[in-house]
Length: 297
Image (cartoon, rainbow, N blue to C red; front, side, top):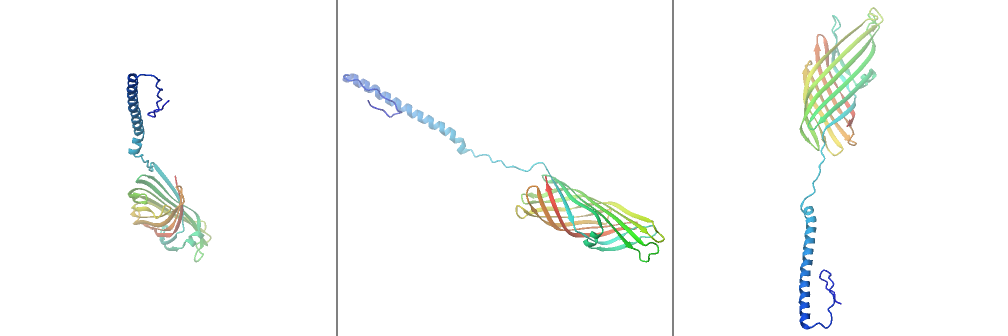
């Protein structure tokens, strides 16, 4: 018994005693069979290789699509902050026939001694290159002092409330993965109220108050630049006027990004306004260190 390895076909043994002519015919028949089998196997191999090539070809020649995730939709940031600001300038009131103006130069320590309440926070909503932001400041101060002669009154108690609220919109002129530079514009609303209450002397129990509310249009720039994936610089500079002769605000801070949600900033801020109307004067500059915590969601 012999084996033919062409495609593993087994050939039956030849019977003994067959004549030469029959042997030649059988041999010729077997030869044709082996040739046909060989071409059949070659065809199967070629088909098999073609099928494998058909499976491999698209993978080898077609690159895998890269999916890039981009930030979409609105993002919101809320940042309460503490501003250790001193106050300098001129403050005046219209009290009937009297319109006294006082030159003020108070350090943060002086203000802290008379601080009743303060709240400060910045908020921002951003969509792609567009943003809407706000900055709210509220401070309530009070203090008591003796009068110079003690005739008209023994003591004078002063209560003062100051509110400044900025609402603005912005557009990013420059924006990439290292930060953004925005041009901004908006309005700042000021409200200042002061009440003086007298005790003792001839004017015991008397009180008077004066206050003003006005609106300024402001514009400028603000931006953020990342020095590293976590360390960044941020600041703004805006100026304007309207109700006031001038209204300006500048700040420069350095920040650290803890994660995608929390970051903190520390730096310096100065805010000035010059407003006067009918004896009421509020021409002051507030400046000092600032520290805040930003929450993004």
